Image (cartoon, rainbow, N blue to C red):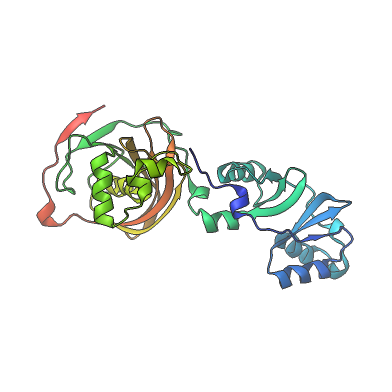
Length: 309
């Protein structure tokens, strides 16, 4: 059961509308009073245009008497819309496809809101900077026994692509896979204090919306931290944004996938951080900022290549 974030979860509503005859000065005043960046232009119950702050700026630069111009003279008539039930991913695709920064939102035939890139970034900041998992050519994987970790377990699988032992580069990727067992769930409940019966009591959980026990969301996203620990150097979390899309079940084998998206300079990096199930479905998607220091001298050991593919 997936629970994606949808447009109606983040859109601005209700919508401020105006008629096409509204003078620019009146429209700008309404935007200023309501602290909004756009108006939807409606005539006869139909959406015929949209006016944004960019349109007002352009009008000021081009018109000799901008205050008296009606919205119909400078509004954008190419209105791009989206259904309120669409996922944020679909909304972002539509924005990129049409080269716009906001969408008019309908629920059936009813105008119910506006969604902009600002709305999306405020709720899910990572979504505008993502690349699809598997959307690029896979590089040769290699597995090193890590000098950054104290030990490894035979159930764990680690793969990396593009990693250099001396530096981090955009496009570098590391994955960490493990089976989240009954023992893991119980030990995490004790360690964290999160003894919610949804995770521990089958009868209780069967009566919830999930219909079964699920793994703690924080335990699942802990695999991201495990993957980051396999990057060369001492990886220090600066921030992490996460969206929980689908629950994990006990004894699922999960894979965290972390990929360097941006070199922020001064040893800081931005990464996409996802957790997938065995079918490749995304349970968590996110974005992290990390600081990577050099490995301490006492931790420098010879790393051994265990497998190549």
